[in-house]
Length: 154
Image (cartoon, rainbow, N blue to C red; front, side, top):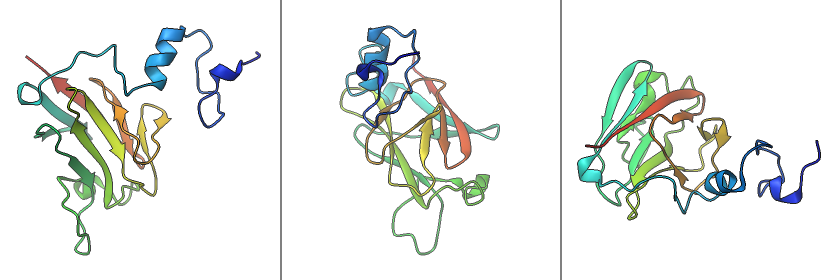
């Protein structure tokens, strides 16, 4: 199969499914303009991560970051969800791994904080410090620790 130049991602890799429509590819590649996802109000939404069968509720305020990582006595950052309890070190979770936050647009984003072992949404690796739009039921993987995002709005 021959690939056109526009089927390559910015790193020159072919991670595009050949039969996707141009609109679907635009949505996947341009998450800063989430035209397919309705905005939600953080105060009206319940956000949780399901990790190893346990639900962790995340309390988010607009424009406030929620830090995911591992507790350490020499860590100067506040960790809002300590993944040590889920074997975070064994699974390669960094001390300060990623953040989840609502943008002013009312959309939820995940940002990798230059972690050692990477952050993934589905099979897609995040670029450090580049927010990735999240959707209900996304599988987020920090290092090799998977979790499922649960968004509930009234």
